[in-house]
Image (cartoon, rainbow, N blue to C red):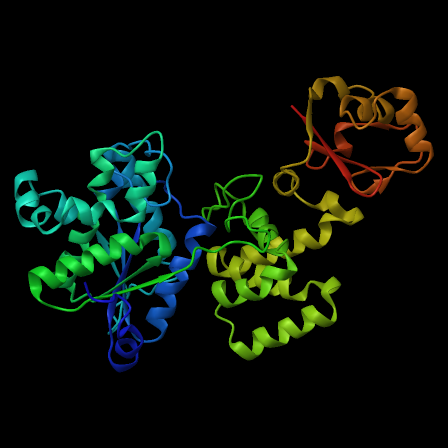
Length: 411
């Protein structure tokens, strides 16, 4: 089989290519792990090429086994259709689907895979792939080595994606498929099918799966997935995710997730080396990516909230923003009616929040000046707090010392 990367750079320089990347509609929103893929399509379009965003309305019914240790939970047709709509709306923030010469295109493989009957598919596509060839693919071989194995359903995924490439080659003139390195086997299968059936050359381009400097897969957090949908991940929490980037990762993220030019990124790298405590590179990264995904207005709001977060004006924030940023902080629920008349003593609140093991220890901490309520030092152990003292009437942020945070939610 031909080398899938052979001539890719030359073809991109010499002519306007039509290229596609597939998106698996496992949810109604993309997440930051998908962002590198989206940015690659956007960069391709900015360089004059035509991007096709292929949403797997049909293949999503099966699930790609690549990089998965277990078979995915199958979704209903209605859920997949809803997910496709959500993904398109997010892609429109990055790609121009207008009427220009290289306007982006959105395709759904349910349009051509849905009508194909099994016997026709096996005759026209399946006959061109040996089982030995399919077993050599990493996505298949890894699953075969696992206890669960791989079902025939997922085993057939490679053939379906190969047919996608053939269809887009025939009907859209597409000659380049891109994706993460885990897609290499699926991409080369499509290239091989085009060569066998059309006697033509097609290309593949993949990039390594991104990991953080600590070795964790990019986008994985203790708090869970960081979504592009503001209903799933607030713009404020999204901004904080990028703002908290490790110094070792920020330069790579600026190159991958923003459209800043090389001199600008070089200047930020120099600033990072000279004054890392300023975190200027992280601030620019958070601002650029949040603006791309959520718009300038939400970015300005997130920046303002971030500036207030660790100062006494934290009470100017909304309760939702506070809860979003302190999502991983130990949280205690307190029935609001318990503080409606007369409030609750700060000593009792510290014990309820498990910030102190006993009332005597809580009293000692307050007297020593080691307790903060909503970022303001509490010096009186006799003080009482009412619902009016809570942020948004819903939440108290307690801090013991410089680092230990506790939340109390009024319910």
